[in-house]
Image (cartoon, rainbow, N blue to C red; front, side, top):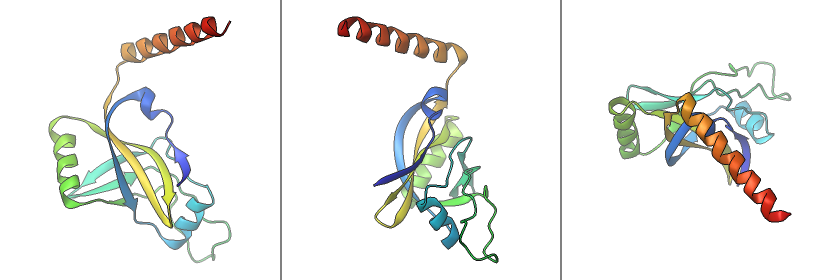
Length: 147
C-alpha cells in the first residue's frame, strides 16, 4: 500500500468517528497522474448526489506524458465506489445528524486507487484550542522525561 496524498487538516478541523474505504472512478491519464504522486486532497470533501457519493475539489492534475487529446478537468467530482448498504448508512448519517464526510488519504492497493474517508463533525474554535493545549502539555512532559 502506497500513500499518495493525505489531508493533514482533517484531524484538526473535525472530530473523526468511523473510517471507510472506497474506490474511485478515474480515467486512464488520471490513474497515471495519481500513481506518480500528483494528487492533493487539500480542501476536498465528499458530497452526496442522489444515491451516490462523489469526491469533490480533489486536485488530480493532467498526466504530463499523456496524449494532448486526453484532457480532464483537474478538480472535477469523482464518483466513489461503495456497497449499497454502506452508501445508505452514510447518507442517513450525513442528512439526519448533520455530519460531514471528510477524505483522509488517497492510496494504491495493488493496482487500484482507493480513498479513505471518515465521518466527521466540525470542531469549534475552543475545541481546537483545547487540543493544541493538550498537545503542548504532552510535548513538555515528554521533554522533561527525556532530560
